[in-house]
Image (cartoon, rainbow over all chains, first blue to last red; front, side):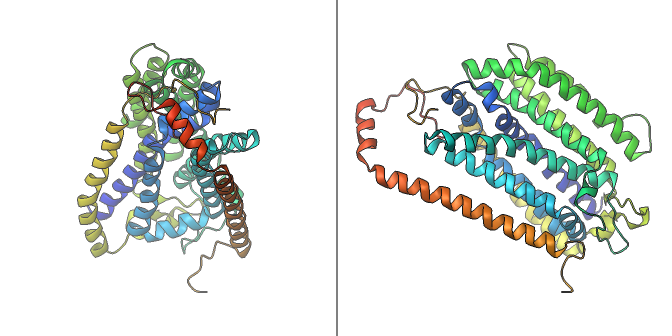
Amino acid sequence: MQLHTVWFVIVAIFWIGFFVLEGFDFGVGMLHTIVGRTGTERRVALNTIGPFWDGNEVWLVVAGAGTFAAFPNWYATMFSALYLALLLILAALMARGVAFEYKGKSDDHRWQSTWTWCTTLGSLLIPLLLGIGLGDLLVGLPINQNHDFTGNFFDLLTPYGVWTGLTLVGLCLLHGATFLKLKATDGVRLRAQSVARPLGGVAIALVLGHVIWTRAVAGGADVPEPVQILALIAVIFAARMAISNEYDGWAFSASAVAIAATIGSIFIDLYPNVMVSSTKAAYNLTVNNAASASYALKVMTIVAVIFFPLVLLYQSWSFYVFRARVKAPATPDQADG
Amino acid sequence: VSADSPSVTSTDIWISLVSFVLIYIALGAADVFLMLRYARRGLDHEEAAESEVGPSVDAAPALTY
């Protein structure tokens, strides 16, 4: 396997890791007002992701940075084409991140509801927009022979891209529900279990549609790839386990696999392209014509081999440290509301 | 000029620049609001709460977020 293929796989792994990890905190962000009736319950829901969400976000940063370093041409075309979409994503990331930190700092009603909306909407917008962007890579955008994007913002809203975005939102919701079932207690846990019933059905329908549409877009074999069948089985399994009284760990693992397989299938169908041109297939960006020089790739591979396991180690450690279920304190906080 | 992105228009640049200025002004205002609020409140409140309740080993920890 050539180094640029290795780096394509690494970038794909960063995206998969991002959605498996940040996926559940997007889900919790979208669901926290539904699973939490009182202010304290909502805080319990948010505190299940409190120690993790910012670490999870780092995976998005390295997915972008890895693309920049290993495939400068891909980065240039993708980030220019998605310019305004990425602006929206950044604004949502900022609003959502600040919302976690600020919300509990004042019990003013308007203050609290502003940050609640930032959390909910931000958690919805980010997976939706990123999903549209990832879908666009595969379905193709107007790109000319100089690898310049020739469309406008609305050209980004391809039907397949929008479906990919919705599928990711649906999977994040289910993943968030299985995470809450695993990490929360009492009313929050029970409500996560009951919203999992409709969410599971919706997620199965979205993934099924995505599998069929991806086959139509990617062409080639009419039979779904093994990874797509895995995504379908995992989402059905997750939906089933999520409504049960037990199997919290199995439900969460299954929704994680469903997200991983869905993102993975996009990158598998994309290879050896990294960005498809809807103008002309000859203008496609590929792992060959978009990659850095082999010396740069060699240095980066050595760095990645050393540091990637370290990052995995300390991130796993933080999940281990905060492994306990979150419960409401005996006396409600004064910033309750 | 030769290093810019041909597909990113100057309108796009203006939209993003103005957006970030507005976002940072809003977040800065929220920050000043919080700092004034906590500065005015003083320390008495915190100390009283601590001595009344006291740390207990069994109780669930306070919610951070």
